[in-house]
Length: 171
Image (cartoon, rainbow, N blue to C red; front, side, top):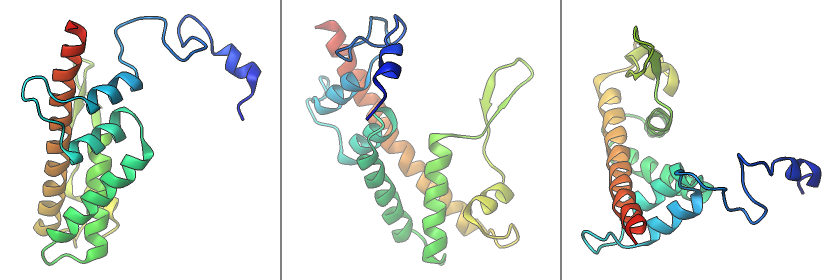
């Protein structure tokens, strides 16, 4: 159980009220996002796909159960599209693709802005635990397929959230 003194210390005008609701502002909290995910899309009338729902719950609501489901789904995707790659390596590639999607490699450019850059073959080989000489086009292709699949799930989730959150704001 959390220390009650530390919990009370967190109750500032910058955090949350005792009932858990914020003090205002434009930031959507996890409950609003979770509610929007459960609503049908006002433009299409359809519910969000299972893959996109689980991805959004994992990334935006920090639901660890759905995180496990996303990892299992991308592992299954990697196993079915592995080609001539060992199964263990395919699983490591799917894990690296998910990690790269959630926290991509960034640099600060000359203007001081953050810019996302793709990892080199040697960095990907290190991430999946193989020698960089052993990293082939098949490995890179599987990584790109996994990354693309994760991106599709995330794009679907973002489109659904944008539509439903705008509908909630209008109501």
